[in-house]
Amino acid sequence: MTFSERTNWHRQQNKLTELLGSLRNSGRDILDLTVSNPTECGFVYPEKEILSSFENHLSMAYDPNPRGLLSARQSVSEYYKQKNITVDPSNIFLTASTSEAYSILFKLLCNAGDSVLVPKPSYPLFEYLAQINDVGLQHYDLLYDGEWRVDIESFAPKAHQSPAENNSKIGKIKAIVIVNPHNPTGMFLKNDEYSAIKEFARQHNLAIIVDEVFVDYAFEDDENRISSTASEADVLTFTLNGISKMIGLPQMKLGWLVVSGQLSFVNEAIERLQIICDTFLSVNTPVQVALPKLLTVGKNIQSQILKRVKSNYNTLLTTHNSLLNTPCSPLLANGGWYGIIRVPRIKSNEEWALQLLEKKCVYVYPGYFFDFVDEGYLVVSLLVENSIFQKAVSGIVEYVSTA
Image (cartoon, rainbow, N blue to C red):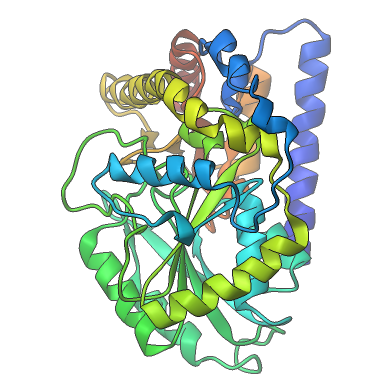
């Protein structure tokens, strides 16, 4: 995203924010389909159990470890064991968040001016994380032809382009970022796609970073999907996750990365990660001590979230399918917390979002926010309470059909 594109996005977002504030000040009830904070979405949190997990005298002791406390890492290892995946606790590094894990890995893998490959469309966080770490971004494409898939052919030109050829300051590519399932498309990585990406990474000596924060939110089972890369044996891989999305506890600030792949590369990466993580020691002791119990208690929260997003996704499908000749349609997804609605390109994404807010009091993300190149895409959160979501989606369909 160029500076002018970012400026344009902020201009658009300011328009939406101003209109949203004006409507709320006038007393209008807003159907907000942008809410992504699970603690604000009406889920029942077992408050006593969560808070009691912090009532532990071990929280009063400071035992700095660049990897994080062993007891916490063992609980993460147990999480993978329940998925029939073996992860050595010594290959796990705790972080304060997935965002911090990205920053750590950019420091590990890239020199200033190097770049990483990220998907497009995607979440705008990558742009800012790259900038503050002096790293450039190049993009590979995700395509939709009835289902989302990775455009493997879009990788090849990037690896051979020099900074002069792509007319930018982007330097050598050092890593490929995969989000599985992808945000916001909800696309799970398929086995054949992963094999092709690994082969590309081997040919060009690249590491792979796999973000699995939504991996426990699949709409249905499918053996053809990659369930996790935490046990990868061939290519140097860093698998990211954390309790923010996994069990709906973003306020607790705990994530992790798992190092896997060819042993010699893994050992070197671990040595260097120990230095980087020892420099910051960012994860607080109480949440590390509490983690084993939080992961157990959090299963109930995860179950509520999964039920909600699956229900709202089905509402998205059935609301559109129940109407004949509707000019808007949902794009099929495999999981995650978001849904995508394709609308006619007779208006810009900005115009659709502004008019839906003004006419129907429905607040949505314009596709531009997630780096959609073309017009005609709106993105909605599936975390919203079911009754609100159903009313809002009906309002979208009704307005688009009459507009």
